Amino acid sequence: KDQVAYSANVVPSADNTYSLGASGNEWAVGHFETVNGTLGTAAQPNITSVGTLTSLNVSGQMTFSSSVVFSQNSTTTSGTVTLDFDAYQNHFLTLNGNLVLANPSKENVGQAGVIAFKQDGTGSRTLSLGTDWETVQGGGYTLTTTAGATDIIPYYVVGTDRILLGQIQKALG
Image 1: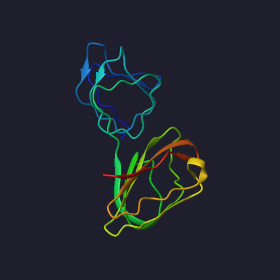
Image 2: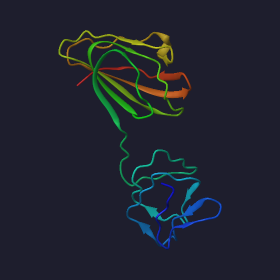
Image 3: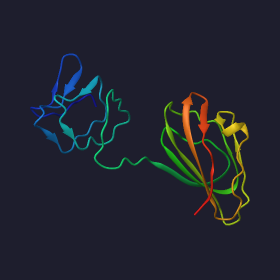
Image 4: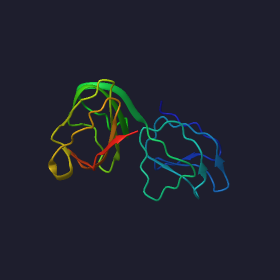
């Protein structure tokens, strides 16, 4: 689909950029499946919706007038699991067996979020970590073992194959 549908205010330029109109214009809805080149705004009009973008790079400050909600992976799991950092910011894992967090392959430098671990009705589930996960003082974590208990661990990706885990917050709820 190498098409751009546009009104008089959207003008594809010879240098492969697209202008979204003058400052007095406000876009109610726009949909861009693929943008080849640069998506720019003339005099910064308000864009209230652009459909689904697979990637957006902004080289300036972004201000949001309402909350920003990241997608969450919610699943019941055990065994060896690789979290998909490309698709999800936050993870809520209900443990129905012992868990090994394998090294992710799609982490994004600068990404941060939380991983919540909930014990199922049996409890006593354990957590082991792959080598990319770095814990406070390198000691790993022992989860709360009470049935139904939830622990939360914040994370921050500082580099490829390097994810810093913050202090565990135990037995919430």
